[in-house]
Image 1 (cartoon, rainbow, N blue to C red):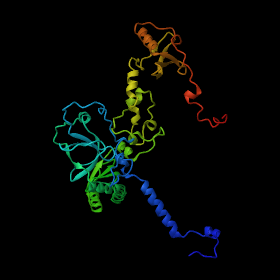
Image 2 (cartoon, rainbow, N blue to C red):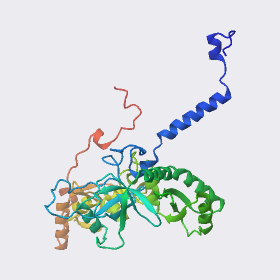
Image 3 (cartoon, rainbow, N blue to C red):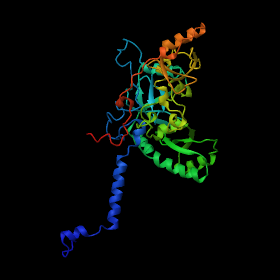
Image 4 (cartoon, rainbow, N blue to C red):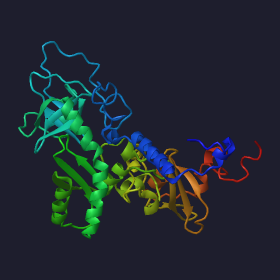
Amino acid sequence: MENPDLTPVDHLATPVPEEVREDEQITEFRQEKLKYNPFLTRGCCETPKVYHKNDGVFQHRCSKFDTFDWLSSIPETPGQKIFDIVEVRFKNSRKDFFRVPADMELVCGEIIAVEASPGHDIGIVTLTGEVVRFQLRKKNINPASEEIKKVYRKARLTDIEKWITAVEAETSSMFRARIIADGLGLAMKINDVEYQGDHTKAIFYYTADDRVDFRELIKLMAEEFKVRIEMRQIGARQEASRLGGIGSCGRELCCSTWMSEFKSVTTNAARVQQLSLNPQKLAGQCSKLKCCLNYEFDTYVDAVKGFPDTEVRLKTQRGEAFHQKTDIFQRLMWYSYITSPGNFHAISVDKVLEIIEDNKKGRLPEKLEDYSKPVEKKSEFESGAGQDDLTRFDHL
């Protein structure tokens, strides 16, 4: 009941009771929880609805889990038997192949129950048809192999309900498992959890520098979560892709946005691209060499074909000159005399090869200046100079 002695202004000035503020905080927490999408790690734009068809939730989204069917525009041969294996995706970048029964027809984006050990798992179909045959060839998997597991059925209502319950429990299970591992003093980091679709098994992904004895940990977690526990060690790259982050380029990590496979990166990729071998600049969030070093590596390999060895010195009548740097795409090489290393002379690759050939025949050119090429100075915008000047916006 309102107090008649209080004016509306007095009502506004009255402090809010503590229990009311707590209720508001609980409401805000629930709203934030509703915004969280645990199925984002499975390439779903939102949590699946139990009583809806979920059209567009699992397919045709900007997701690294999708696979483009480049044979979709090619008509099938009349009488051709449909390939009986489909590609299915699970959490993060985990994908597998399953054999489809003869009386079942599947399309991309469908939720299916597949064979697992033990029980069954729930996955989303990413590829069907002849393109799967090429995927198997890429993975060196024999289509006639008996090790390829089976598709049980299209997911039922009860399957989806269990699946949603299992996925929503993954985050809380991960934090609880970290507390248990820390209590045992194990030198490991649990960074992800994947529940099987039937909620009978959980895979805990961890990283560790040394071998870890987690037998006691498995025993405690089995008692805590009442499921079968499997521990799976992953590398630093896989950990970064699961956790995500911002790279030195200012964009989200490639491994967490679109990359689904990791290729080995070596320092040779940096050498070919004339990059400084500075570990702090070449290393990514995972403390390994950046995956983007491989992006333009093949282009540079093709471009440096025909370039002379940089260890070869050019001999002239004025003296010997050694290599300083190279601009691969302009096909320019800078050389300096041993007596004056601070003076650079830009010479085209063809001229350098010509000088080396003359040296082999015993002929010495008079000087490098006769072969040097003037280099156009880049504008301020192209070179990037002045972009960090504090007064750059004063003239606007």
